[in-house]
Image 1: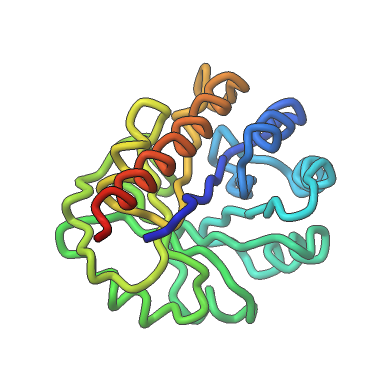
Image 2: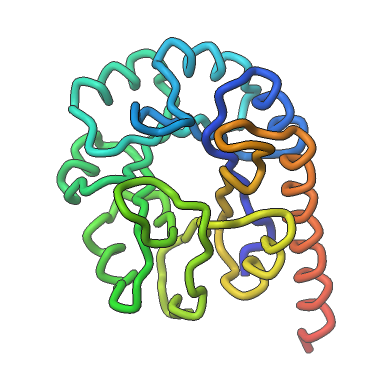
Length: 219
């Protein structure tokens, strides 16, 4: 079992929201480099926001079928950036950078996590989201029962999470990390510091409940 669920807050655009996420205990913050998204940031904006991060909080850059020159520019500007591929990128395009990354997947009944893990050997984790039209997350929960316990790659549970349902997701899926964006927004694309704090607190409460349960059931 993963004793501490990592927390990723995605789609950040404002310094106050970055600071709220850091203070609430987020492990990673996501910055969207996809111009069609309402949460998109420029490279200059992202670099200024990343400068606010303390050590051991990871910046994540979300890309959707980006030109390699865009990714190269982002890595030059933010060397510690963890890449997240959320488009149709084939494994070779994800692996070409020679560094760990997150591979986003839309989970459907036919999704084979084991096969995806084999095709992405250097992925730090598979980020599991609900199917949507187009690209990116749709703020919807997918059928968690589609996930098989035998999947041997770390997973990031995403898709429609909020403070109200993240504990159930952690209990049922036991992910390595959880990822939230719209679930901590007061209006579309605008984060709420209070919702960020509530989400992080709900994750920590879920971890504590699972740890207590495991101590009781372990002979």
